[in-house]
Structures are given as C-alpha cells and as structure tokens.
Image (cartoon, rainbow, N blue to C red):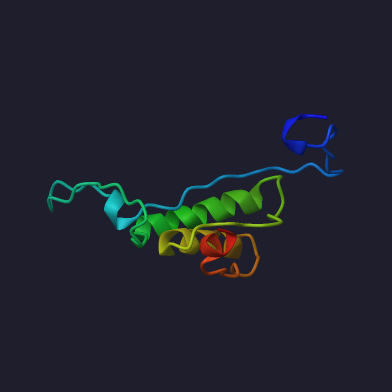
Length: 111
C-alpha cells in the first residue's frame, strides 16, 4: 500500500478536460501614468476595481474563449474580489452563459 493510506490505483475520470487560467483585467492599481504621478502597485487582497481597459480585456477574453474550439466552460471559479468577479462574470456573459453564482466566505467555510 502506498504511504499515507492512498489507494494503490487512483481512478481516472472517463472524460478529459481542459483547464484554462485567466487573470483579472487591469485594475486601477496596475496603472503607471507619469502625467499624473500614478505608479503601479501590488494589489494583493485589496479590493481594487477594474479600469475601463480591464473591462475591455475581460470582454476580449470572453469573446476569444467563445470563438475558440474549446466550447463553453463547464465551471468557473474566481476570488471574491470585485475585479475577479467582474472579469469572471464578463467572460461568462460573452460566452452566452449567465453570471456566476457567488459563494461568499467559501475560504472560511473550507477551513
């Protein structure tokens, strides 16, 4: 028997899939603009919204996914930050799917 009580054979799903990872669109803290003295900052867990360019990037990503040979996503997951939820919802709408359901505090519930 393998260590840690793992089964000797791990079942393989009968259907393979594709994992697509997307980062949220540009946020207002991702912008460097010398004319205004704005300097790009690390956003981390701060809930910073998308810029209009970030919203455009999300729409473009959704259209690219919709027009690809991959088909619509079976599932979509994102953090609870506004920029991530906005990006995810926009991509799903562009793919002709409804907006994502929001599971608040799922990280707390899983702990």
